[in-house]
Image (cartoon, rainbow, N blue to C red; front, side):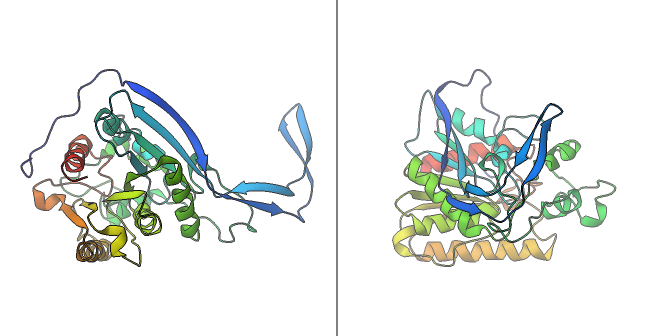
Amino acid sequence: MPAGQEVGPLEAGPLALADFGSFYAGGRQARISGRPVREIAFTKTASLSYDPNGLYHVEQAYVQFFIPAERRHPLPLVLLHGGGMTGAMWEQTPDGRRGWLQHFVRQGHAVYVVDNVERGRAGWTPFEEVWPDAPIVRNAEESWSLFRLGRAEDYARRRAFDGQRFPLAAFDDFIRHAVPRWLGNNDAALAGLCAALERIGPCLVLAHSHGGEVAYRALQARPDLVRGVIGIEPSGFSQEVDPAAVADKPFLFVYGDYLDATPLWAKLDAAGQAYADRLAAQGGHVTRWRLADMGIRGNSHLPMMDDNSDDIATRIGAWIRATA
């Protein structure tokens, strides 16, 4: 479709599914010992002696899947969240519009939404014997600038970048998405995603931000399962690029606007270009969209939540049909 031309949302109406469900994948067992027993109360009438010592299952991924009644693409689409977020980011926009989950199911894709290790319904562990680092949670001020809604100094006034497409009136609803993240769990996240992919089978992975690193590492670890990657402003990449893992596979990189707003985003934009070049040099079929250069201005780090989210998802769907 011509650059800058927007497309309308998908038709309204019931969402017809052949199946939906969920499963857990991967993880490991961890035994906790040496902790004191203490008295706890579940309610005013239910109390007991709680012994935290014992066997736990940790570092699993949770996957929810939606199979449309009419599948139009043979490869499932796996949606992988970014850092400090969960699969809920794909369900609905902060201002109540349909999210990319619904959009891609309506396009005819079998969609698998991952809550990876430590996030959402995958669960987390409070024991430092398992994860020694303390978690972090993203605050509102950091979210405002890091996700390129506006400059850090303009947060208090909620003055956004000119032309900003994120639904600013719903910003407080958006920051409710934030959950704890443990910075030392990248290897566990890779293992969790790979375990999920073993259940799903060959697929395309659409990953946001930090999820990009996990997806590109999974491409290298399980090239038989990852048949292509759609990186939505990926912030990390695999160190290695094995030609056997990338040759003849499709890769799409999608970047929004305001990439020169901070040194961090200028650096990440350049890193994404360098990684895309490495994939192409090893035989990958690489497409890179800088939306602003295509005449689509105003997108933040969260195009799946911006007011033109349907337009972007429709373009991605067209790219999949043409190249994947």
